[in-house]
Image (cartoon, rainbow over all chains, first blue to last red; front, side):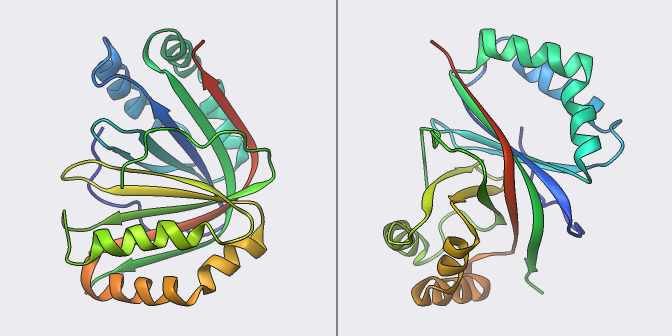
Length: 112
Length: 112
C-alpha cells in the first residue's frame, strides 16, 4: 500500500478519485487483491497514477488520477474491479467514501 | 495527524483540496503548527471537515472539504496559514502537491 513519491506532471483539467476507508489492518485476501488492482488499473487509458497512505490505527486514503470522465467510468465498470469492490464491502471495509472531483487548479512544490 | 473517522454527510457539489506530501517524520515545530491550523480552519465559513493519513516511511495525504470556491479562497488567503505554508516550504517538506477539485459525485458505504 505504500507509495513514497508523489505523482508528478499533471496538467489540469484532470480528475481525482479520493477513496477514504476504515478497515482492519490485514484482512484476508486484501493484499493480493490490491496488488492485482494496481496491475489492472494500468491498463485503463487515461489513468495517470495514484498515491496511497494509511496511518496505523487510523484511516486509509488513496487518490487516483484520471485524465477524463471516460477513463474513470472505464475503471468503475472494469469487471474484476467491480467484483473486488463487492468483496470489500462484504468482508474488508467498516466504512468508505469516494469523492470524484474535476481538478481545475493544482500546484506542486519540490525542494531544490 | 491521525483521523479515525470519515467525514460524513457531504452533498455535492463541494470541493476537495488534496494535499500530498513527503517530509521527515517529526520536523521541528510541525506538530504545534498542525494543531494550530486544525484550530483556525474551523473558523472558515464553508469548511466541511478533513481527513488525514500518513504511512510511516511513506507519503502523507490530507483531504480538506469545502463548500465552495469562496471558502477555499478564504483558507488559502488566511494570513497565519500563509505564513505556515512558507515555513513548510523552507523547513519541513521535501515535496508536496495540491489538487483542488470540484466534486460532482460521491458515495459512502458503512457496514451495518
